[in-house]
Image (cartoon, rainbow, N blue to C red; front, side, top):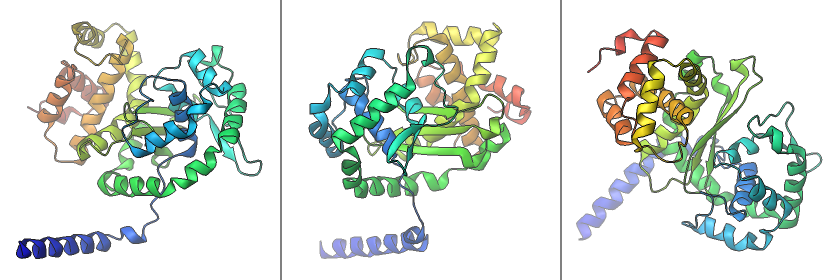
Length: 329
């Protein structure tokens, strides 16, 4: 037993030495947890929104216990009344930023929330959110948990972020410097994407990939999720064009949608269409940047109900002029 203990200690020292040699202690690893996003997620949690009420971690339980008394605040009531979808929390988050001079949150210039603009007064909600932030003293709560956030951020950097090739997205017109990742330890389900786009310059588009609490998932899952969410900014417009044309792509999408094996969160044919192209782009990323077997990647998508992924991937390769991949078996 003593020898086993000694061997374990030696291995641990070697591992720590290897980590140090990589320079992690010298890197300025950012806090990937965004205060704005945690604030919005808390409001969604108190409103009882689907996917936001998990209490699987100590941090999530502290959120629930600390702020439960504010479940009737106007900001919470608004979220409850408007009936937002699970992906709107990130879209709302990126609409505003903190004005340090005034100590409040303010709307970004030219901020849009197209799908909800007609029934959602953004400025009124930001005013309510500022009041919620003040009366709950959320800023202090966030700062008290920064050590936990840095631990999660460091782990994320080590396991996932250092392998992320943001330059790969430049070929599709995106600016790699405008790709941002937000960790969301306040929730345990559903990852999303959102972006700010002026409608003219794709290069100016600012894209966010959101990752929920993920400690129990594999490294592959985390990595795939980050790429997948960024790929939505490229894949969604392509999917909408293809689907609107009533082409073979539309038939493939409807075939999968009607089979009923796809996750219910993809509630419409258009959402399935967007997932198909995004998943094909995600596969292309891993073909270009890793040694992952393409057939394994195809099978993973089939297992989730995207039975026609090979055909959609073939369409995408022809669209992008990547003919060398079409004949892969």
